[in-house]
Image (cartoon, rainbow, N blue to C red; front, side):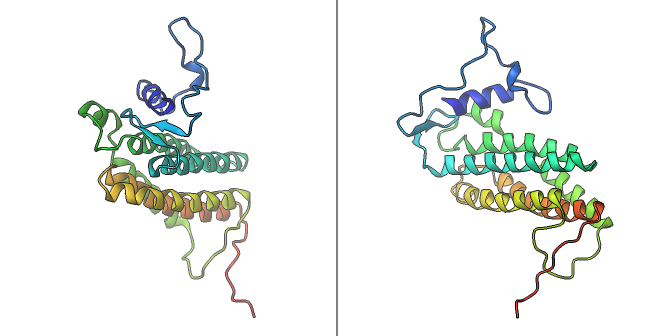
Length: 217
């Protein structure tokens, strides 16, 4: 039950991001990364349900995991260029862990203890909006459609944005069915706006040209 184990470990540590290396069993040995419980094509939700791996819950979890990885890659490019907003990317990756926890806890099978441990905070949405507004104050007005470009930092953030859109699409039906917190979908919607704006901001700070869409002749 890898999903249950990960959520439990994530929720019992106070730092902004938990460190996998700090997890240990009672005999002070690190747990094995493989569980073999998914070998037959099924996996567990946090509530203990066994579902096929192609279930919409696990599709959404995979998309949010991919999104976090893409943001991690973009963060490395941004660090190389000395961008000051990388701490925001750190926080977003941690929040995506909370997004995953909420998605992995279908409300139809969740006990109150599950709901309390995986409740999603709407304050994260406000943070994104504040960061977007800050970037926008410095950016020139957007007067054309732009293509993903503007240097490695910017292009990587654009890639993360497109993955974020896919994650949002996969979460939408789960939220509509009442199985996940509506604020999770709102967060992902706002996150794609943040990533678009951060990509433009990175290009501006690096004085890199953003490619403009032009209709082919």
